[in-house]
Amino acid sequence: EVQLVESGGGLVQAGGSLRLSCAASGFTFDDYAIGWFRQAPGKEREGVSCISSSDGSTYYADSVKGRFTISSDNAKNTVYLQMNSPKPEDTAVYYCAAARGGLGPLLELYDYWGQGTQVTVSS
Image 1: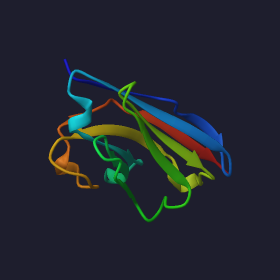
Image 2: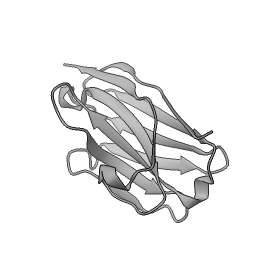
Image 3: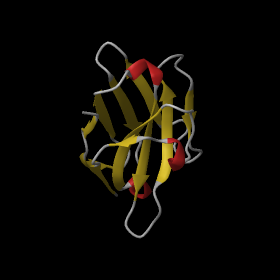
């Protein structure tokens, strides 16, 4: 059974830091890219960052470049999203997802999704 389980969400002050984790199981991790997406109330889900498990290539949305860092521990089948200097506008439910067919922010690329974890950034 494929599972993507997010953890690490919570309440953080603007300018602080938070690390999200995405633990994957049930598929060949090295064959997939793992992406982080977020959805704020009343807004569409958007791509935040993603990483190729095979070669480490990454993508970042312009809104998080220089503040968020994505990394992968292939031995643990886990991808992390380090959120530094978060802003109130980063408040959203964060989802991780797995894509076999490519790397990028398009939702249509992704085959499997986690249930999400809430991140709230206070000002």
